[in-house]
Every structure is written in structure tokens, then in C-alpha cells.
Image (cartoon, rainbow, N blue to C red):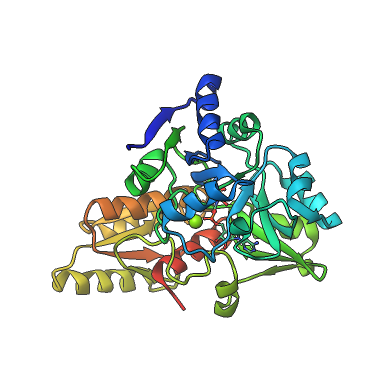
Length: 341
Ligand code: TXA
Ligand code: MG
């Protein structure tokens, strides 16, 4: 059976269509839906059989836990057995929005959702279509990103179809994801806030809110292994990615790599910051965004990786950017796409 695509205008949501999608969720089906970060692949979080279908459709390993999405704070009390005071403060400040919190799980959460861990990841999205779907479904929705395991997360409905057509029941198409990288995942351990995955809420925002010394960002490899998306090569296009970090001779390094690949009859593509675009004249290049605008860079990253795949580019050379603001999340995804260890 093919996957049904419903177009939903975010600004004037057709409730009839949302009800149709909620019906699929009720029947233990799979619905891909837009969020402010990336598209999610949703199923009823309290129905193990529905959740099992998510792993199947994505070909996701059974030891990679899912995020549970909620509409209202009251839903949290059914999912989490303990809510630290600090978590309450974070909810007040950042929900609804691109922040996922790891909390002690309650008995109600199927083991499959948390893959046997004693914690559960919860987030309240802000996208109006996601919120309506959660509200009308009347149940929490487990949803990883709606891509095949290991591929770049989908930032529009065509990406979802590219990976999952025929494998899921429905896609709600509301155009481009605004943020373009996934939510920030945090955990509260021994009075510290651990950023397991940098994402849509920046580390600076979290530090401003909680005090710099209370926040730990996981970056080292051993930590990366324990953190979300722990499989080292991740977010990957089909083409291998080489990451050239920011340095005085960054452009020269990129060009020399490019020429090497060309002379080996490869078809390389460059992902560059806007400021360097002119320097790559005549080469195959796509602009991520200005190096001073990490928001734009984040919103375009996954789209560009997939575009290069579609165009048959077989090696991607990406310029690194500063790890400020959303630059931290962009660099985290690029490092994983490059499989850097
Ligand atoms: O923005 C997002 O978070 C998107 C949208 C759809 O909400 N979702 C998303 O889900 O990115 P996913 O499955 O692609 O990434 C969730 C990550 C996983 O890599 C998983 O390792 C981590 O969250 N995670 C889930 N439960 C966890 C837990 N109990 N402890 C530590 N990490 C957990
Ligand atoms: Mg994912």
C-alpha cells in the first residue's frame, strides 16, 4: 500500500484532516508529521505494537530509544515517575519548543519506547500541526525523525517520502521545517544539566538560564557513544562527507581535496559558507548560509545533504563553521555525517 500524503496549511489547519491522521494513530498506524525541528514518525506511545512498527519502518536498531511527544504538561505525569524541580523550571521556560528532557520513566511507558532504559525522553513540540495532532489523538506520540535509520533527518515531506514511501501509512505535509536540526536533548544528573545532543535550543540559552558552571556539553567520543544517535556514522547522505574545519587555509584545503577527487574521476560537491562562495567559482558548490547566521545554516543543512545525493554527487566536502549558537548542532551533525572519531 502506498503512503497517503495530506497537505495541511499551518496557518489554517483543516481539523478534518487532523482527525483522519488521529484515526490512523488510534488504529496503531504510523503518521509522519511536521515539527519545528524536523519531521517525526509518530505512533501511539502507549501501544507497544504500534511502536514496534516505527522500528520496522525506519530499520532502526532496537537499542535506540524514542522521544515521546506530548501536548500538555499533564501528560508528563503519566510518563515520568519523578520530575526534578530543575526540569519543571526548564519546561516553564522552553516548552513548547525544541527541548527534550530525559526523566525517570513510569510503568505506563512500553519498554520498547525506552529500549529497556529506566528513563524516558519527553518533548512538547511547538509546531501547530504537531500540537493539533497530539491534542486530537489524545495520547502521547512516540516519534523519532521520519528518515530511514542513519540518513539525514527529513526537513520536508518529500524527504519522508524518499525514505519511507509504502512503509508508513500517512504523511502530513506542511512544508519546510523551520529549525532544521533536531531538538536539544538534556538530562539532569547530580545537580548538573548534561546536553546529550545539541539542537534547536542553543547551549548558550541553557547556560544563560541555568548558569554556565551547571551545564556540561557532551562532545568527546566516549560521551558521544552514550549520547543520542550514538551510532558513530549518522545523519549521513549516501556520499561520504569530508569535514574541513575552520582555519586560515580552509578554502585552499577544500579546493585541493576537490581537485584530488576530480582527477580521480569523482563527482565532488562543496558545502560552503556564503562568505566563501565566490572563491569556489566554477566548482560544484552549495551555500549553507552566512557564517554569522547559524540559524540559516541549521535550517539548510539536511536539505543540502539530500540534494547532493539526488544530484549524484559522490563525495561531499563540507566547510566547518563556528560552534556558536546553532553552529554547535550543525557541527555535531556534520561530524557524525563524516563519521569522525
Ligand atoms: O527534534 C527532534 O527531537 C525530533 C522530532 C521528530 O521531535 N526527533 C528526533 O528523534 O530527533 P530521534 O529518535 O531521531 O532522536 C532521538 C534521540 C535518539 O538518538 C535517542 O538515542 C535519544 O534521543 N534518546 C531517547 N530516549 C533516550 C533516553 N532515555 N536516554 C538517552 N537518550 C535517549
Ligand atoms: Mg533521528
